[in-house]
Image (cartoon, rainbow, N blue to C red; front, side, top):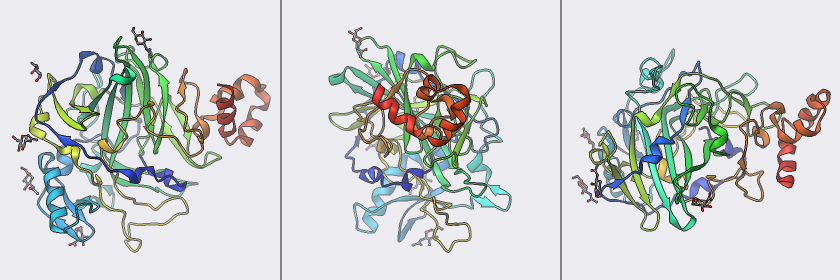
Length: 402
Ligand SMILES: *[C@@H]1O[C@H](CO)[C@@H](O)[C@H](O)[C@H]1NC(C)=O
Ligand SMILES: *[C@@H]1O[C@H](CO)[C@@H](O)[C@H](O)[C@H]1NC(C)=O
Ligand SMILES: *[C@@H]1O[C@H](CO)[C@@H](O)[C@H](O)[C@H]1NC(C)=O
Ligand SMILES: *[C@@H]1O[C@H](CO)[C@@H](O)[C@H](O)[C@H]1NC(C)=O
Ligand SMILES: *[C@@H]1O[C@H](CO)[C@@H](O)[C@H](O)[C@H]1NC(C)=O
């Protein structure tokens, strides 16, 4: 996802103190959940494809700042290895990282096991990737009459963006992105879709995301940006985080992935904070893979030291930063469908857009800004876009009027 949100004082991610436990008792996933899952358009020239989390972890060891557990890892011993390392260093809160046991970069670029573009392209007829599975976590919220279906997508590498021709910055090993479909619990109808992008994200009505893809127009399609895998509702250029389009993501109608065809499923019980494996899914792998979701460390190497030849400083971000934390750190118990708000959204509102043509704040795409379009004559649009830095002023106006 890229941690550009670190540009601003946004410290929410440091609060990862969960007390989740695992149960081997299985729970059922209602059929309507998978039926309404989103598809994902990868970028046409994407080099960093989705990967398989079990193959990925087998190339890593469990590390703290001053200890490496050198045995290879598997999903089923991820959490026990974490515990073992913390016991070794005698610190039950020690910050943990998965550290690569192998070379991951060569003269030509990144190793194939990080990119996967040779092996993990979706099948063009149905969107299936045999070698990469997604992770579904269903959270029942009866007090609000919602059921949330979180879909997590794993990419072994995040290639950060370029700023004015220099970069990339904000690369990391391990990249978790997610989307949420919020259902009306009583009627079982999908209401909203929210998708993550750079520590923030955007929410839309489920309706507005339909009729966009060739494989299954009755399901929504998300656009995953080149390299960063930040997610958007439409194709095009998506400026983010810093003004005047200096930093942009790009999406297009590239390979269409149907993550639901190959997934593992879990149920999180909010009250007891217990995670259950699902039964009744086609894979039936969940029991075998065990309690890996409870791993609360980082899914990739620690930020490289400044003196490392691969590391590089920029005013925006270091070139190679910490791997991110896993699915359970993403505020699954959220009340609104948004994970959290960007810093500019002072009222911490979770705005649900009615149409995919409406961008958000600095993330607005050119003249797709609703207010600008409606009240500005066409000849003036370039000027208003310039002074609003591609729409961040319009974000405020939009907030005041809606
Ligand atoms: C779940 O099953 C595994 C493998 O059979 C076992 O090692 C583990 O202790 C069980 N965990 C719980 C919480 O029952
Ligand atoms: C752990 O392994 C990494 C990567 O091989 C190495 O750079 C680091 O020095 C090791 N740490 C310790 C304490 O041995
Ligand atoms: C984890 O499991 C794998 C596969 O079963 C095994 O090869 C490895 O040694 C185990 N690692 C640890 C740290 O227990
Ligand atoms: C959910 O569905 C029920 C039953 O159809 C309906 O009464 C209620 O208004 C719906 N709630 C939302 C938030 O759509
Ligand atoms: C799933 O588990 C539930 C509760 O343990 C059980 O009633 C149901 O028969 C199981 N379904 C399948 C397909 O195994």
